[in-house]
Image (cartoon, rainbow, N blue to C red):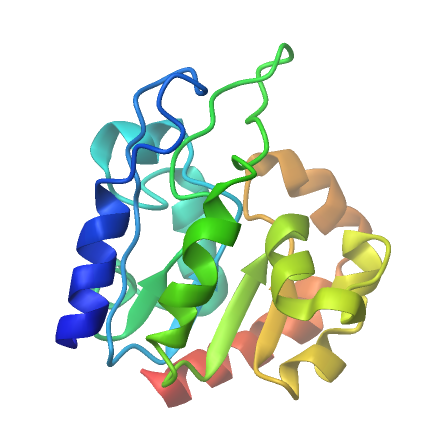
Length: 195
């Protein structure tokens, strides 16, 4: 990791901008490297990730690694895979038990500076609507499904939009079998080329 990136990540990891505004004490979780060529951009760490300070340390992570065709060692090797969610801390739960959206101050404060210090990234996995809107801008469609359906266009620019690998999206995956049939083989091929 470069000194500049290392200093930036150190500062990000002790961020307390949202202290008192979240259900828990801020615990920014990020994995970054000046060597990684794959960036996983998701919504925010979940409950288990917050508890362990390890991103995707849950069943969603198992599914994501399967989608990518990587093992745990490859996935957690910062020199290969950077993980930078839109919100770096677990935002807490809503009244229905779902995760709250990422804190609004997080991405505008930290994201551009972090990405600027990792110009070597060749593939961004934009997981979910928040990451897709940030990374695709006006190229993101109105719905997640429409954005993911246009994956070939986005991949030509180094961004692959996907749904979240959570069990909550099992219904979406059943309704959209083309994702596993067409998108995942291409994702696995790209990941293998970049590792």
